[in-house]
Image (cartoon, rainbow, N blue to C red; front, side, top):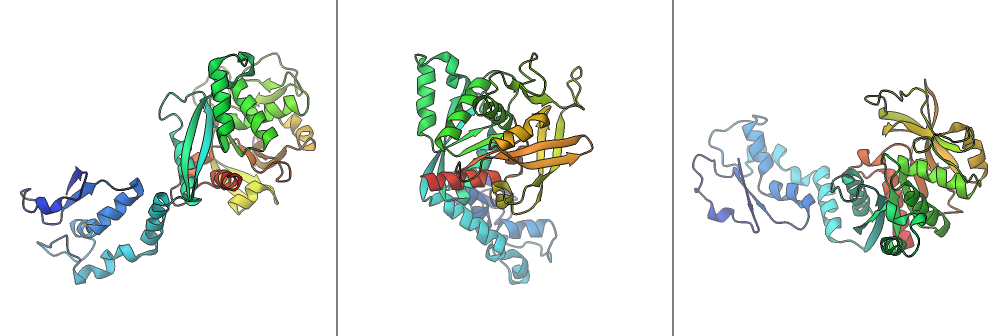
Length: 358
C-alpha cells in the first residue's frame, strides 16, 4: 500500500502511475479539518476492504479491485455503518463545531520543553471535545507566580494577569523545588476565587501544603521533599513514603496502576460513576496521614483513598460544591487513562465546570 500526502485529494492523477501496486491500494492522505477525520478519510477509500483481502481475513479473490466494495465482502467492509464509526464521526464533527472556547492555564515548570506535558494536553483536548469546547492553553511558568518576586517583577505581573484571565487551571506533576511557591500561589488564587482547578500528583501535594499554610495556619508547612527541618506531624504536610529508599533512587517510586476507593457522595465518585477505580501512579512522597483529620475538619475532603499492604494512602482531595464549583486534585495521574472517545472523568469534570463558568 502507498500513502500519498497532499493538500487535496489527488488519486485521479495516479491511476496506473505506480507500477505493481494494485488499483485501490494507493491512499490519498490529503488535508482534513482535524486529525480525527483521518481514519474516516481512509475508510472512505476502502482501506479496510484492502486490509481484509491482504490479511486473508475474508474470502480471497486474486486481482480484486480494492477500491470497490464487493458483495462477497459486504458483511465485513461496511464498517462505516457500525456504531463505533458513527461515534467516531460524531467526535470528529464536534471538533469542527465547538459551542464555545475554554482557556485553561497550565501552571508548571517544564513549559519550555514541548512534550513534557503532552499527556495532560491530550487529556484536556479529549475533555474539551466531549464538552463541545475549543481548547486554548495558556502556558504559565510557575516560578513567575512566586509572591517573593514582588509585583514590580515584569514576568510576575504578566503571568498573574494571564492566569486571572483563564477560566480554569491545571497544576500538573513534577519534581524539585523550583516553581513550588508559584504553584501554591496559583492554587490559593483558584481556591479563594472559585476558579475551576485540577491538581495532579505534585499539584495535589501543593494544594494540601497551601491549605495547611493558609487555612490551618501552619506557616512553615511544606513537603519533606523540599525541606528537612520540619516539625514532625505538624509542618511536614507531605512525607517520604515509609517503604521508599532515600539512598537508591532507581526503581523505588510507587509506580503503576493502583486501586482507589472513592467516597460516596463525593464529586469524584459522581464523575467516575463507581466506587473503585484503577489509575496510574508515579511518586515517592505522599500526604501525611497524621494531618488528614485536621484538614478534613477545616473543609478539605479526602474522598479517594487506597488501602494496601503498606498502609492507607490519600489519593483524591476536593472541596464541597457549596464552597467551590470545582476544586479537585489527585495523587495519581488521570491523564494517562484518557482517550479521545472516553475522556478521563477528572478532566471531564474540570471542562464541564469551565463551560458552566463561561
